[in-house]
Length: 246
Length: 259
Image 1 (tube, each protein chain N blue to C red):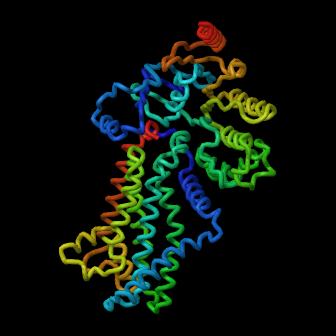
Image 2 (cartoon, chains in turn cyan, green):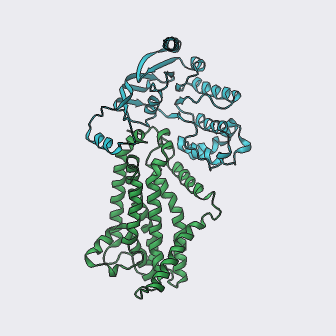
């Protein structure tokens, strides 16, 4: 069964947003195409089956994050069709929705509800989350007193405990110190081994190689390669070296 | 575009409301007393002006008369202004977490109802202190307030969506509130309004709300009267909410591209 499917998907953004907002909006309404628009994704086709773990690789600005925002339905495609089946948990930006003036405890509750926990799940999982984040001593302090690493630990702890069918991870594998990083990676492997689908963007190729079986390589918005992880990574590093030597 | 979010709607709404309320008051030493101070100060000033400076003998109990106008007006302006900027200000949430997007402006309006509750308590206390006693028509109050909240939710859904595309919207709303202060009967009665404009007042949900409140709390009669005020309020509020929701659901898909 395909849980994620992209059919001829393109995504365009307007250039210079902020300066000609009204004009752009009117053009959108009239259905006029904008010659200045920038294609973050161009005609992308792929399907991911239930239980697959797939890496998305490519240079900065290749369209990886845009692809993830289409999978989470945060953005609609400009053309084509995106279909998703199952409960998705997205670790797009750890700590999105956190508020600095709320305490750790209050932020856990708020973030849990944002990510789709029920009241009961939030209560039952509270201890697990705090234990996982190792922040018992600071849990009633406001978040603005936390270090960056502590905030990321808290955010990661909430997100991975949601028990999703599809887990989407965007560059968030580098969380906290090495010991905590190892713990996060273990947790992601555990989720994968439970047969969940994982879609992962990262530059940490070492981890990707172990975690994922398949990779999608994006370059300037186009899907240039889709295949077993080792082959794609090899081709990708070859291409990058080639580009660097030129 | 259907959302992939299938969490607990009420739990999320409750958390967003509590968050708004907490962060507004947490760093203030006077806390919720600010909710009482603002209407009390305005009531004092307006009473001074209209009782001492240019006395208006036709209105009895001027302090509660004016408070019946100020409490709904205050709620209306605060909720409308905060609601309008809520989507742009929560772009982190809108762009990164697939929550149902209607919940952001609605939670902002509902968090303002916490102050509203405090101000209503103040209003009712004054009504009793001025010897106007409790009557059976007080039972209308929850319905009237619900209709005003519904009306504001509708307005906020529309203006918050526009604010994503045109950040000028917030200034338009601010100016509209200043104009409304004069165009709703806060410190004057409907009797002095020329006949031909009266229907405009009755179909303005905010004005209808104020008129209804005064009928209940000061005159001790049913808010409906000959004009069918409650029906008009129910009609305009429902239309406002339906239109706001329709506009918002049409525009929300493109929020990601514009935030």
